[in-house]
Image (cartoon, rainbow, N blue to C red; front, side):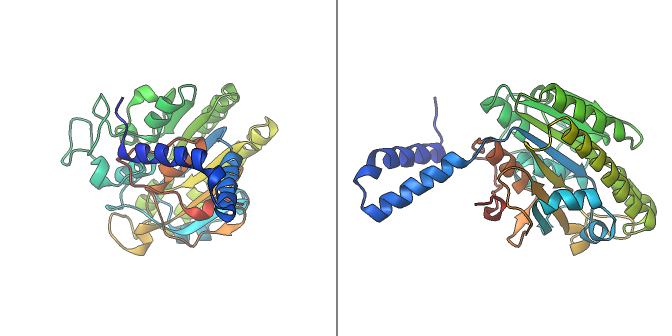
Length: 321
């Protein structure tokens, strides 16, 4: 079996700590024991739900009435300065969220990417030609994990190898509420297994394209989504699924006028949030954050090391003491 340089160094350090801690000077040994104790306190996630809305700009998120998201994220950590990858369009950014890498690694540089139709090849691929996604990595390290992908924009699933997804549901014409119901049922059916659910809707982005970003119709689309998110959370609470779930609130880009794809702050800076067991509560994140960090955070929650090809990092401020 080939061991990567990163894994070799990690194993060597772990062995050195185990063999040498007893003979270290008092203060150093105390620090080593404290670090080991903190590591043991980290609890592997039971369930991670990705609440994913397309095209949410920071100003729109702040102006819209979103009491349910506000309540959820007040119990966790929220960033209003998260940067997206370039170009600020849908497929490159959602791929970056779910692969821990930017377009320069995964090769999804526009919305027209397909497995057999690309310009820039990925720097690493699986046996079927796909760049390693968070679903693939988790399935290979945690075979019992259950994964689901709910979406309503056709191209969104193209960069992912479906054999690592246990349930997939696509809805046409901006429909999304039935997928919220399916996601709840999926989590209920697999309540005793580790679970990762990607729950996405494009209707917010389409409202921006049709009526303009920050139009009343765009704001209303965010508020409608918040209502459905609240309904889902209420059902999870009633069914005993809420307390041991980690929630991530994600989006892929903002917008300006009738579109996006440029490098203005309205397009490139978005909200990003996380709440759940062990997450720092009531924190407004100040350190730099990027959409490539999302998959790295998910792997950390499940206690799985990330692939060498990934570039995402876990922000230090996310985890409470």
